[in-house]
Length: 371
Image (cartoon, rainbow, N blue to C red):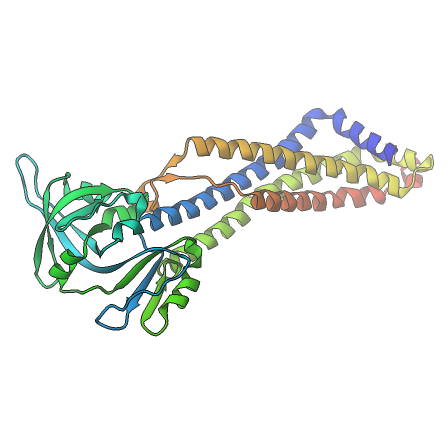
């Protein structure tokens, strides 16, 4: 074992440039794969966080016209009656500013509604409205302006702009507005449709919804309304991981190419060692150890480069056009499980690529070579 280890190390250090390039190839492939997975994790988590800033964890629609009381549950942080409707928002021309017009979803919240979205800083008042940041910009409105909401039944309600909110999800920032429940009732003739509920753990929304619904409510968890988006993001991560892993596979083939060349170059030495009494196991172990050195070294280098790259992208996140990607910047989320999975898959690819030169070395016949 010690003799094989000595020979393997001597072979790798004799051609440092080739060895460094092989290590760098594996390392860069691993680093790119880790960065891609971390960016995908960040995109998914960032989109979910941004969405839940202005989207209820759980909605309970009442089966009856009269809203029944909400039963208690330990997972519920806050709840409030609500009614939502589509409306056309208009802002009349004023001074040097032209008019503004845009469609929006008006969410009317009853008592305790501000606690549903603590990150938005809502302070609802009768006849007041909070606009999404992009919606406010589209209307050209400022705090204190008067805007008018027009419903499908041609009812019109005047609202005073109390402020704006920004979630980071462009769809919400450009299409949502929060008002008091009475304004929606006056605009669309709707009474409270049910409850919007905020939970301690949003991922338990389905379970809690079933527990609270009974026969009086129809539960709708945020995972159901955002199901298509979540499935698309999961599929995107899988496809991206497979495609980027091909980089690691190409680097592993580079390792195989390097080791095959070494076997061809060292064929006379292999024959001489066999003639001097070295076993096939010892010869094979030399090239197996070379594959281990290159694989482990490349993976360690890739983990380091990937970690540093992710840190850089976390400190200086990439800007995104919100109307295309929903988020205005691309966050990074590193997961230890991804590092383990990528390292394991990369090591397997490298070790498998080392089998070809290993078998070639084992097939060397000393008598034929030395003859």
